[in-house]
Image (tube, rainbow, N blue to C red; front, top):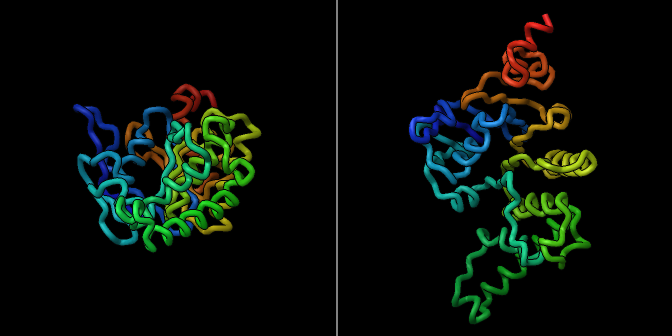
Length: 258
């Protein structure tokens, strides 16, 4: 297993957001985490990536416990992520946003930068090489020197994914990468995710509400409700699970369908 969470919990003033979750993500897998609004999906990602501290439980990545580590240290170990709200530096160019995403892999400090040392020149060369690679991957080569604020919503989502790719992640956490996008843009982002998984062999864990997209992309689905896992398995199994149908559509729907 690439990632394991055991008994992972998060409470907010008595409110249980994540309730003793056990989660496994196998290397090479494309896993989707779904559930109604407020089910605890984004909080789970925040716990894994170190943005929030867990109330209880442990997280292991590549066999090493990472519980409680700071987000930048977890990112260095190989976990990249995006957010529901696209977090970009809008007044910087696309290339600048990507270069910032590579900062965790550089070692030159303030004095190296000021003195333009050999270490600084090597870091700069590696950064720009990776920027060029990622621009090709996400399809924004023609927009490399455009300001992030001028990009379309779909292009901004691509850029956010690109920033997460800059550090060569082994595991990519994508939090609603197509939220608010049109059907056409959703297909485009879905195609990018499929290529990252198939061609670049990146393990992906995806939070998404668009179930048609999830059913087409995911190899396995985990369903959260009220902070707990209520079902997991192959897409076709999840689509027929009464607990999942009840969580999304209510008890009345189950009764009507019987």
